[in-house]
Picture 1 (spheres, rainbow, N blue to C red):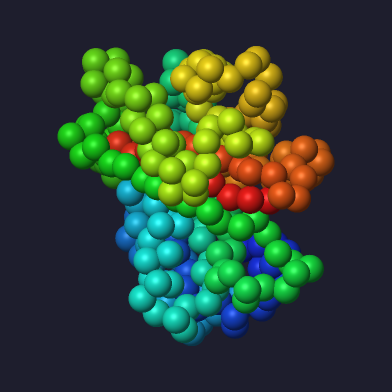
Picture 2: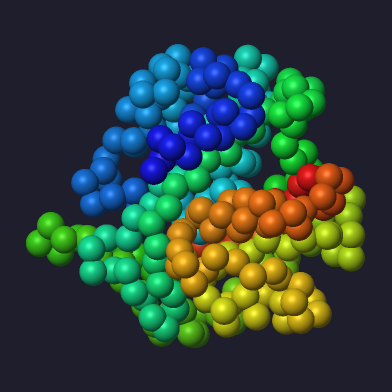
Length: 273
């Protein structure tokens, strides 16, 4: 899946694999057998991007896209030779961990994003313009959702008490703080945003997001959540692509991507279509 997602992103951007200077893998749980070396190493060879620098991290979880973008921007700001970055996520729930009810149901997915310096892309292949990205972590909440191995078998472990007593009281508060910081960095207000793109953890979680922002009913468009489940960090990109295919996103509109994940991490990215 990850090879197909990367190939499609490269083709849509109108570039070749040799144009990629940096590959960043931000998968949370790629597979039970690949918890060491990132699959991005093999992928770079498969794509023909052997000369690209490869980075990999597992912090951020479902908010990994924001952390990946912020990391890529840091590298690009200190090295002018990095013109094009391929951001990748490929996640599959360990066997027996598909259902984490009542929190969510996991689905397998891969996604890829091409991040390029402004002005380096052809007008015919120009994607959304990145305006701001912010992320926040609270390390003492890392115990809320962990991944452990018992007798060689991997499991996702949820500390329900920590979720109820420590995470949920600050969950939307921290999301709101990060969102305001991203809006301020882009010199925007909440009312300027045309589309909010949020995770597919659950219907209840999406309703909570709308309530936090006092959005009218129907502000979040339907997503393929029932078809794919919660796909870790790929949720945002799946929802974006789905909206674009349905013709909901028009050039010039402002998009706000928001998600939270294990770590515990919150992130917001704002872009102009």
